[in-house]
Image (cartoon, rainbow, N blue to C red):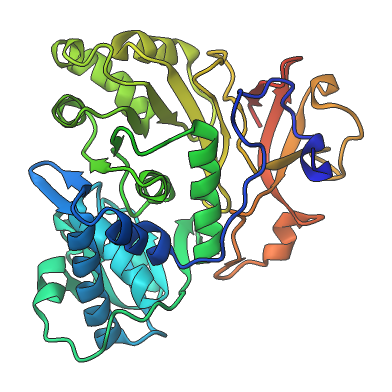
Length: 396
């Protein structure tokens, strides 16, 4: 076992899951779009409601929009994306990545942070366009970009930075760091191409970016839906095997869509529930019971993406899970930020630090080095572990 992973707190580790996996130095478009079009051109790659595109169609739409974006703003000016879990938003994200423009992802329902970030153009789906009204930014929809006569080719791949708003700052990632997080999560959850994966997260959130990338990295079909009844209908209609949503939305669905949930009993292999911190294990138990499948939890942050997740083979309802594949997690003293020289299960509580290939490359304003200790991100998250290596998030 590599030394860097040896002190990761996980006495338990799921069978047939690699602890360490390589991350190729590829452009996002190569892994998520071109590979799909090359190997499965006629298979459905992305579904959203009644809309669906094949691998070949996805490449064509992404290339056209990328060329229009590059022609409009070049490769130096920043572009904002505000989009929900939609096909339009996903194509715009992939097009901006292909064009190599600096791309800032913002909340489609509250994109106010975009106005002060120096963007030359905002791309949006219907939901994002409504949120951007009055922002002062020029807003472009996919249909508009697709209809423009393009002289600048969108076929040449150029890696640009991709940023998430985090508080008053922006966290910037490279294509490789985002790909690293997607491959790590796909490896840990053993996501394959056999059955579709559904995400209800906004594609312009860090959760939504990983929610879109994981199935495409695996060569599978991505299904997009708003949470609630729409998501349950999509599970039944598309034969979804794995669903990625947030705990609050899933719990609300158990109250508001009881009848619809009965129709998908036994359909899902698991439902993956993102949480921003402490959570109610009783809500998790109810989700598992009503969805009739394991209710897995996932915790992460914009700087590094997913950090902890549970695995369907075995988990405890009170625990957030264990570190993902490729995650090197070290407990440190919250006051001194120095590593605690003992096993995790001997520590009553500690600050979580992490190194992963998904680690961000920089802040807009802040100093990246101020958040790092020995190359690991100081998360600000306090946690403890039990003798099985299960991690429990604690109050600050």
